Image (cartoon, one colour):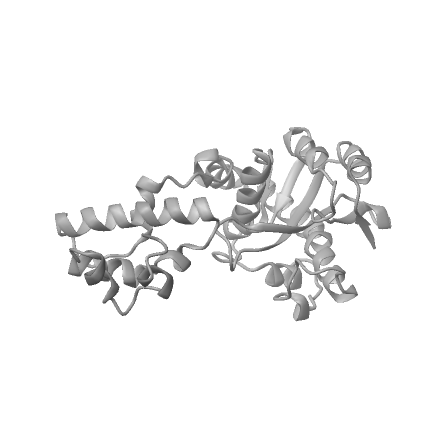
Length: 276
């Protein structure tokens, strides 16, 4: 099992990958305490059975640059294969300003091929790769070092089985003539605007039960404030103001800070005026 901890090592793998027809990609990250995901591990694999054909890349190592990987992502001669790619793509776009292309998402392809909507990776491993996954490391802290052997094995399996799944689904779509159906969804996933959250549009994420003009106007402004604050402090939206608290404020329309502080739903930090 190879873990890449230097820019030179990553560059060497990416040079080999540039001669491959595809590379499978996955990430491990944390987002519970931040607005933006913290990238903790990148898993990569190319066709082949050699140990060096599948590697773990440790982005937390001081001095390691992901630029060789971003260069590979820009290489249109190599297909980049993900499963449920959206969060991974968001990370790479935010951190590196790049969206991997050409893209193949096995979750999207599996849906078109008849495996059901939002089918999980584990299901495809079982049904297509005829194997199983050790799930014991799924919810571990990926920012802690050193990684355990179990964590490394779990992470690597996310890209090694993906090779078999990709080749099967690619061939199935070609035979059925349904590849264009997949491309329609992938066009959305590879559009930069998919990963740009404008504060002015943040209110659309809040589920409301009324269409009152004044109420919605307040919701828009509160959601905009929450988004700007969360982005600037890199904290989750819920740490600033949960949706139910936001809706309560929009409904009660407090006129003063004292009135605002009477809300039972606002977080303690908000009551203290720390986000005012």
